[in-house]
Image (cartoon, rainbow, N blue to C red; front, side):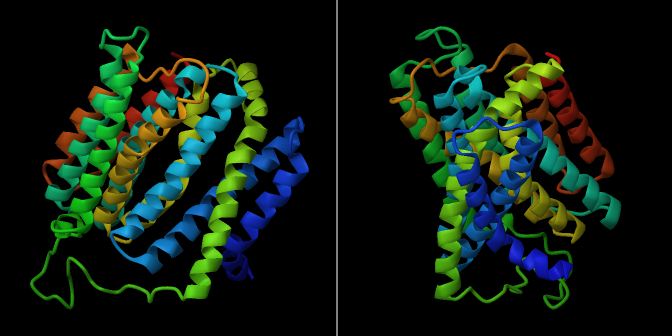
Length: 367
């Protein structure tokens, strides 16, 4: 019975989310109802990513990676833009806080948990340093240009880019993402495959080839329709529960900027689950691909989309990190470099990353 419900969940959740959307549209929700809607929202995010994976499997690489990244980015950008239009606490820094939270969650949370789980279950799992190091370098370049530079440029004050600067960074970020996708799925695809540990290809291979058959055209079309419904429901339900989230943060004495952290956790939840399962299955390279790949997409696609949306949005767009965030980013990149260099994982490395994530969440709550 449980297996049956699990298989039906990707179909039922978009429909349930659509019903919840109609029932709660433009209504103030009691706390209990808001919690229920929030749970449906998370379920819709999981369903959206599932259907994006189905479509991606059908179209193949490199389009498959693009479909997945675009689907996650639509969720993230949709939530950011919807909340910015609705107004509320710290909307001018919402995009910055969400993008920075995505980097911290992926590079410390997803990667750290994967390293810890893989080391606990499999001893000293190995990964490909070439591909992982290349992905980390793209994360560093994107975060530095999009989130650190505006804190120091003089063209505009208060951590903002001028219009020309924002346009340049948006184009550069998109170019870096495209270059990474091309490298990961093209000529250097083997850099992102699991390390080959034995000489017997039947026992161990960098690409086992054990892939499921692509879904049929009918299944792909159904998933595409449910994907669109899920994305629409997620964006609007996020707008619906925004006042309750802000009220809850105010009641708990948590800064309004923490909304960006909440958005990032929701958007990255499916990647976190998938990366943890891969690490437990001794596929640490897959976990690292998911973690760093999600960080790259979160900046490389979100910043250009927000830059375009800022043309119609009222108010300033603050992207520059504050001093505490810059220090946390520097610690993350330094520790990540030392983590990637050996090409193998230990429990200590995972614990270090998770503690950095805990420090980020704590300082976001108590700055």
